[in-house]
Image (cartoon, rainbow, N blue to C red; front, top):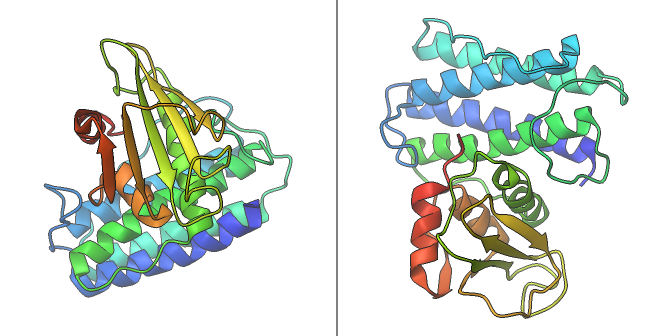
Length: 258
């Protein structure tokens, strides 16, 4: 996907998030984030939007702490979130392609620039939390496009869980396969972008996209790309688990991003 596509997705997802939060009410519980209410979701996502926008707008070259959310609630908090989202979208839209600033994980991109990184990362951040807001509201959630979901799976496996902070570890070598079945190459064993091989050990997971997809694996997680995307972010159950179910349970309990 191109940076412009991620920006369009970020814009749409943030608008949907705000609308769902407004409909649910800020006191509504968020079933997909136990212990959170919609106000927590808005405060967290709004702070992240402002934090990300500052790296691009101010060209920060090193990490900086996130700010604190305002002491707002109800309609005022929804408005603050909308403003946070608008500022982020406008910052990314106006930024030069060659902007330089800090980024934090190595997931490959067709255009590996800081602008591409932050636009992609915030699109996925917002899409997952949009689902959370819609879970709080109830009803049918908006769909996640298959191409976007495949990209998000790749970012999660080859970005977040390539870092030393990943807690998905096993005492000995194990192999976890992830297969999106509704995109080319996902319907069966193939060297294609819809399949990932995740090698687990007592160190950070090492993920290979495509290659070796027909080799043996201890466990395979499979299903439509959009459901796998949400499942790997621990928002919905994995559509299909084959092989050793303990690795699926290990993912569920240890894959939270820290």
